[in-house]
Length: 330
Ligand SMILES: Nc1nc2c(c(=O)[nH]1)N[C@H]1C(S)=C(S)[C@@H](COP(=O)(O)O)O[C@H]1N2
Ligand SMILES: [Mo]
Image 1: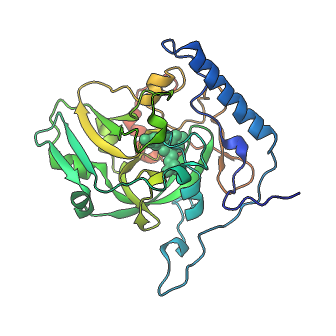
Image 2: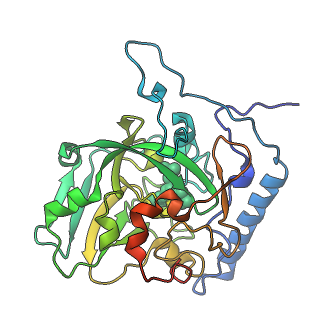
Image 3: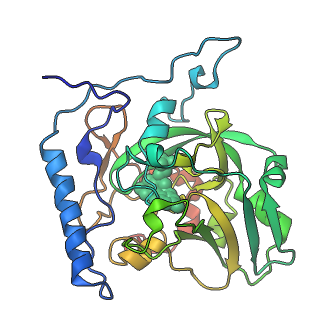
């Protein structure tokens, strides 16, 4: 019997539980068992549903009404690859505050209220400030079509809308001793169901960049995609996009940005330091301890394609890491 799964052109084996093997010494054996069970579940799911679903084009058709729908416009990245569909980008998500199941994130976050919202920008700056949504909207928005390569081995091409992080940081005037930027997501267990006391993770989600990475023109603060305001599942109302790094660096639902003297510890470094480093630059020559990073599956495509150094942004960003051992600083 064929059960057509609407709006789901992905195979379940892509649901690699990123979270679930590592043995955190300060966690109980019960937690570890729970994690192992989750991992086993993922494998089972993959094993009994291994047939590749045909790529579908749901939701991205032109809508009725005057003028072209933004989702009907054709976007492509600078390498000529077409953007993923709006449906793909908004229904296959990693957002552990809501669900570890990529196809449940959109469902579980549907009623998440991302307005009102405030982002506090402070730390080693001359003019600390709090930005509300109006203030963020006043910054000039632009479209950028970026590849996003998840550390799990899948990728998408996404037409983001937003502004360079640099423009926000310039407003607060970074102090000369600021060397790192720390980003913090919302912590609100009442609104983010997976942040409850039983959660495996030390919430909130935290990420970081070196100051020169943060000031790089490619580093985008995202407010929308396909010309529309960001939906909750993609990190509304404000998330980061750092296209040459693995997707987990692109933190969602940002409420705080701090400039620091020392390297911040991200949620993933805390959860599994042997698997997720601070830099997390896309590098096909450095495998994840549990899988290859040499290739990836573009959502909507069959088969795999080679992963590109720095996710294809090598000419723009390689100079940031001159003299650095890219194998050691994963
Ligand atoms: N706060 C928060 N940000 C997050 C995540 C998360 O779980 N929580 N997941 C990350 C991972 S692993 C990826 S691949 C991207 C996915 O972004 P998308 O769902 O918009 O495609 O978001 C990143 N940002
Ligand atoms: Mo990811």
